[in-house]
Structure formats: C-alpha cells, structure tokens
Length: 213
Image 1 (tube, rainbow, N blue to C red):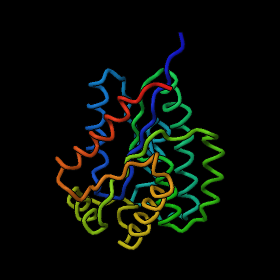
Image 2 (image 1 turned 180 degrees about the horizontal axis):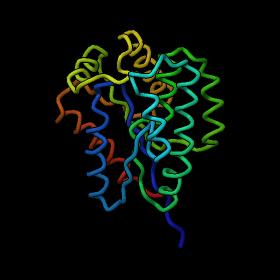
Image 3 (image 1 turned 135 degrees about the vertical axis):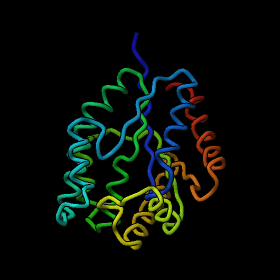
C-alpha cells in the first residue's frame, strides 16, 4: 500500500514578522488533524546546515561577498532538501520550514540585487522540479518589523542591514506572491496575534481538509 506524500509548507517574511511563533501555531493545528509534522528552518535544518547558519549570521565575521552568501544558502539548502525534507515527505509527514527558496530570491535577489536568473539556476540545480506546496507570507511594514526584531535582542549579521535593504526584500516577497497567488497565503502580520493566528488557521484548515490527489 503506497503512502500519501506529505505536504511541504514554508513560512516567509522580513525580520519581526512573527514567522516562527506562527509556524508553531500551524504545527499544532496540523497535528490535531492526525498528521505527523516535522519543523525545520533555513539556513539550517541539518547538522551541516546549522554550521553554515553560524557562518552566515555571525556578526563578528568580516564582510561577506553577496555571491558567497547566496552559495552558502544553497549549500545549506541542498543538505536540508536531501537529508531532511525529502525523506520526511516520502514517509507521509508534513514539513514546515521557517524560510526556504523564496527567501533567497527576496534577500539575495531583492536585498543584495543579485540577478534572479542566477538564483533560478541554483534552484534548478539543487531542487530540480521540487516545489513548495504552500507558502505563508507574513507581511508588515518594515519599520514595525525591525522594531519588533530589535526588542528580541542583539542583531545578527543580516539583521544589522539598513531599512532600505528590508524594503527591497518586502517588495520582492509581495511581487512573488502576486505572481503565484495559489501558492502564497499573504498574512497581515501587523495585526494582533489573535488576528494573525486566525488568518493562519483559515489557511491551514483549507490544506488539512483538501482531498488527496
């Protein structure tokens, strides 16, 4: 008897958007429906990926070339996809990831102004035809997001960038969502936690109740 493939859900947004806490809320909702849920993150998700994450986010390291940053992101993603995401999906588990490839298009493409055709080439190389099933984009004004992020504690290497950097990232995220409205659920993250969680619940219920194909 064949096992139904699990779904791969990603959670995206700028700093301070509330991705991580709402990912945990979605996890609880999905588990309540009887699914097994694996939670992960990028960069990271595997032992090798977490070491790469340490390099990418360390504010004490010298300035990193944007190409180096992009390649390290995809090196981490290659490990993540092959050793954690794919095996879990094949088993029928659902995988929820705090960031995935959309983040590379937003941060390295939008923020760092790297030609998106180069990012697409890496995406095709690392992931082939693999696609995300659903992306939750937590959107809010940059000033609000950075204010929330600052309240969390010391900024990492990327969080130390100027507001204009994050404005470009937000614009890129929204542009991607506009071009793939069936994959993206755009969540107004500027609202209260209860309101944001209600938006997440509505989107999750659609996925949980969707008939198998």
